[in-house]
Length: 319
Image 1 (cartoon, one colour):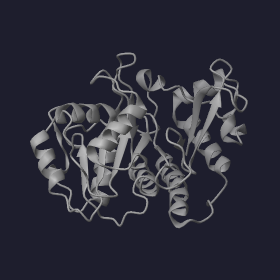
Image 2 (cartoon, rainbow, N blue to C red; image 1 turned 180 degrees about the vertical axis):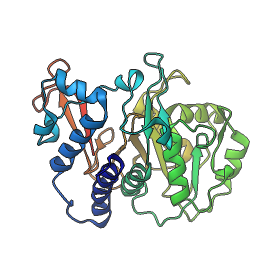
Image 3 (spheres, helix red, strand yellow; image 1 turned 90 degrees about the horizontal axis):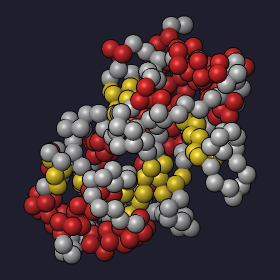
Image 4 (tube, rainbow, N blue to C red; image 1 turned 90 degrees about the vertical axis):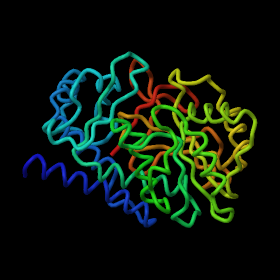
């Protein structure tokens, strides 16, 4: 089997997890079985990962569980090629902001089909839960054409196209790095009162929106959802998470539990969400992983799992 055919088969197995989740069916195979096959494929086709396995004393052929596969540090995306295909075959290149170390990490994808399917399935379950799609979608962010290397812009555009009534330039309200306030105000005030809307935004964009409104309320239709994601990256003043949620709830007229946090990273292929809309007892500030991903807290030096109740760094196993 060629490398591409093998990759396509692994993609299909990962998408089977997504399809089973959408159908409420059992997962198609054990998580660890696919994770082990993915690790072996990566070790075979990504030289840096093979070196990492060797440095950790791990034989890729002996990996039987996800926990046995060495995790790749996010900094590797800044200094190495973490992909298993020819560079010319990349259909998307997502880049980090570069705010941590200055260098921008790059996550190349040959095929975004699996990425998009997973994002839509889990986003629909936790952000758009209970909504009769399509609904109006408002993106307080740039188009994916304006920000082609942003995984967040790609996800927002994927949501807008799949869930929105009619995606157009009028869906997006950050242009040239600035919020188009007159257009945004006009769009929100024209929303039908009997149809909830979905607003997709970053934390810093919402701070800019609140500052631009200066205390003025801009209420959304009843039942609307607001996605809240990302750090501030020096692009706005910083606001404590709870205070920002309360301010957004008040100014946009939505239930605080309908302001839903999303956690993602350029280096990942899955997103995690707060479950405050989908589950009545779900706490704010706690993110839920989909069944094709696991998050394990590990010791920052030994990388061994920590005991319940202890803090660690996140080791994310993402099929």
